[in-house]
Length: 68
Image (cartoon, rainbow, N blue to C red; front, side, top):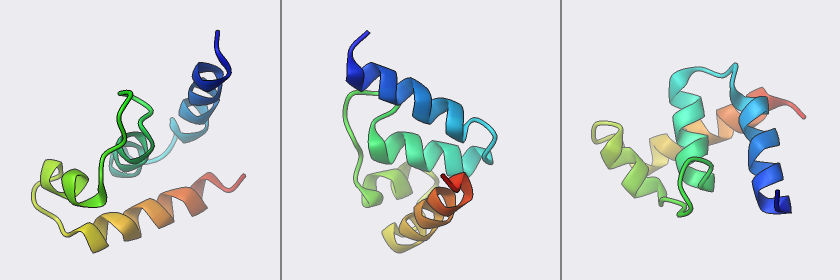
């Protein structure tokens, strides 16, 4: 297993207890489910048209929630 895949696995384990919204935003922003990272704007569109600023706020709260 490559270091990149190993890190993705560790991060997925860390975020598995977060709310669905937090987990989805982090996974899409940092490319945990796919190889490509999405922009805040693209994530907002996928989440029903929320603004990129709101996605940024959700991402920041999710990162703080992991608390590593």
